[in-house]
Image (cartoon, rainbow, N blue to C red):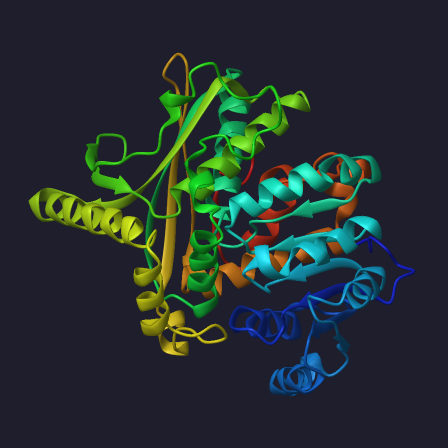
Length: 415
């Protein structure tokens, strides 16, 4: 991969913010193993903890810098952003701890990636910063973890392949997820904060992240699934996917942004939907029904303060997560099907080993940051392709190639 540093005159290429958290520690380990001659640093609120993380990652982290910056200290956040070409943040809940850091990145024209799935907060970033970041060529790219790289990058690759193979626009993509892994405390903390802040109701907006003027005339046709069904294209029973209300909004923003750039791959009105795969046969049908009901009841319960308090008392605390064995034994698979109006089909797949919320998320966000730091001229839109973007619209095929080089299955990789 050809490397050209985005900001050679700054002290660092990438700063890992939130490096002492559960996923943050994994990003440090990833950089220690794979960053090569990239100039990088750890950042967070405790110098002692940062130094402990750096030492735990061995010789590969020996030359990494250490920057102290509390999320409430705007001057320190500005100093972090001014010192680097790219900030990678794993410090959630992002609605609580991320706004000042993003503002600093926009002010200093520093690219930014994170692992949030908090779409109401992303909507706020769009409203506050998209216009300025677009003018400056600064890429602010949230949702670069398991939420929402497989869905977003996969849907874009399939849509592009449909266009290149058939010279017909892609009018619909649907995705089907299978996964095995654990939950870290930070993910649950973000979900609970979303409910407690009153922002949870905004999740129902099917086009929450879309640019003005890009919402279709009949948005109800894109409604989130509420019941399981047998899908002939996937030859399996499928049901609602818990991250669907996040990922679908991200994919729809990608489609709108790419159309605005003149990308012919997306037909209008483009439809995207995704599901959780349960398998074939009567047992799969029963599982789909039971899990769908349980998921709906759980989501309804979390609207109440008592249920959230109970969930918090029983859950893994922030900074903790699954065991190494659980994470190593996990896996994920996202199958995708794109169609033209005439019925032509292209299938895609993004899959890999490792817990999706931790191992895969770490790979996704670290390779996203490295793409920004080292391959900026090759990214979609070139040097001026800024704004509050999505993984596909901001990183595109560069990220797909980087992930494939790390052993993740990415199909179709070439259009």
